[in-house]
Image 1 (cartoon, rainbow, N blue to C red):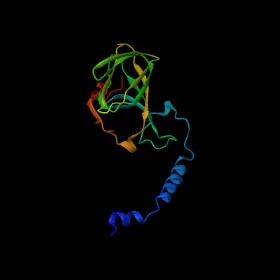
Image 2: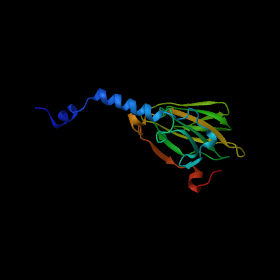
Image 3: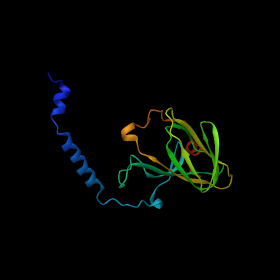
Image 4: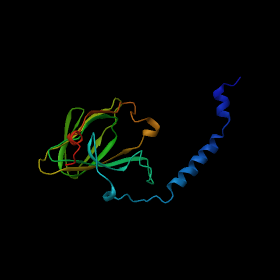
Length: 173
């Protein structure tokens, strides 16, 4: 005797459902711009600091949603928030100099450097610091958008451990 779940699953043609999803996705992507203009993006003050989001799971009007991509600015002498996350992020330092604390170990960087944050099962704890008291740090960061298939926690626990100073005051710069 089939269970209620078996009977419910038997009511659909799941291959046909994939084709419907494909057709809906194709329709949603029609006419979306292939270029995202940085000048058109607002700077957000959040727990991590000052960020501009190019690609994010909640931004639906882009032709690609398989990555998270943002620019972050750290004001002179300031720092980002501190978080525990899965890792797997690549950062390119566009301006400035500073360091990243990765699980308590200091890793210095400067303009032109690439920072690779490793993926670790229990997660990593990171925080970024601007060591220059006169100039901001700017970097871009990208990571795969695994959130739909692995959840935001990604088995490591995604936790905001400390807020950036700019979030506390609500002021940019």
